[in-house]
Length: 264
Ligand SMILES: Nc1ncnc2c1ncn2[C@@H]1O[C@H](COP(=O)(O)OP(=O)(O)OP(=O)(O)O)[C@@H](O)[C@H]1O
Picture 1 (cartoon, rainbow, N blue to C red):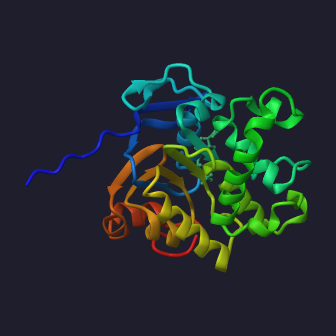
Picture 2 (cartoon, protein in one colour):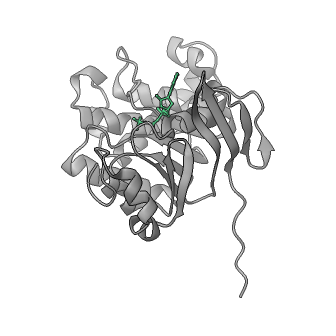
């Protein structure tokens, strides 16, 4: 029986990033195929955020390429991601403080709106013809993440865990093909953490996921494939079981505040 690996949605190859004399990444690669959850882990300062930023177009590597569906992205910037079909959540929540939770999610649905974000917010353009559809879709996204009760609330009045659910709803409401998650578990505990794990697992049927995360329980529970960085280089790749028993990974984490196989 032959199995064919699906073509990657996202492929980063040979990424090298230097900040002055410091090499943050040296010849690093990873890929995310449709329906897979890829974890990017490593001790503090390993280069995870730098790679996330290179993939997102926040920084431009000195060497290497980022490809989307086989096409090299030469000058992409973060604001191009939505049009490509890529969504991301950042360590900060980045919710608009003056908009209700529902309106925040509707802004995320902008890719589906013909009127664009400005038209949607100001009532101009085709806002009215699209509004009900978008509102329903945004509400469904809030429901999916257990935050429908917060729809009318301003983000600042909501508990942190609910704000994170709103941010996640905003990221996926436009049905991206790839979701980039930067430390989504930070600041979460208990029920919120379980809900996040369930949500990420459920994404498999709809999109690929790249997860940068310190919380090892979450990484091991939801990832299909893990890439481990240390001092800007890939030191291990593979499924969670293999990573958990890899001596090089254990050694990299020695002395770090995070322990592989334990809570982050
Ligand atoms: N803008 C910058 N200017 C200079 N050095 C930087 C910059 N950004 C990151 N670095 C350095 O690059 C290296 C990799 O940093 P990066 O933030 O990517 O690591 P990380 O794995 O995300 O760490 P953490 O888990 O602590 O967030 C570190 O040595 C860091 O100090």
